[in-house]
Length: 318
Image (cartoon, rainbow, N blue to C red):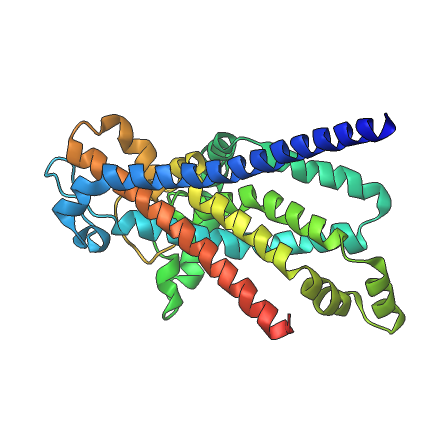
């Protein structure tokens, strides 16, 4: 009798285990199918634009719905530049926040600061956009931008980055607000991965006379490099896909200008502004073509991050 009950229980466990395994497989297949369906739908929707413009769509700066001429160079430029500037600003600040929270912060401050970071991550992007447009942009245009233009605009080579009318909105303003938006994501990820470093490793390094700087860069960073890169890529993905805040602040003009203070356009802001007005099939196809380009940019960024991690592991001898 006991043997029969044991066999019944084992058979039941086996059935539930099979259900669990098949459910997880179905979830993984669902993700792949969803990704494939999105990619196929974008390609099908963008096909008229591909046939009409070909490779010129990627090299043309002309976006004229009246004449039926479309080019993606300006949105690509705006997307890449704002995302790069946002990451350059956000990563060092996030790194400093994570170091402070894990190594230097007094115990009574850790929880309030952690909650504050999580609250910043939960603020809707439209709130950042409104704050940037109505509060930061006027202050920046009236006080900071004229000073930068006056003192840096005449410098050789880099001076071109700081010229332009002091409007307060443009690529740099959009990138700065983007950086504020992605700092909580990167900082929280870095804090979590820094926290999993065994205390024994850190205490051993401190016991041998290492400074906090040395422990950070010789012990913690090598141990957590995968998580750190993952946090940066998470922030970059958020920056690439951000819509509302960028639409408020970038200026939404289809031009390419080397100045950081010039207005521009990103792929997401172009989509947000023009989808409602896209009555012409070619216009709609060109917008879907922009969406496909953003999809591919994100895919390339993720692929590069994987290659970087693989090379780092090889150099480390793993």
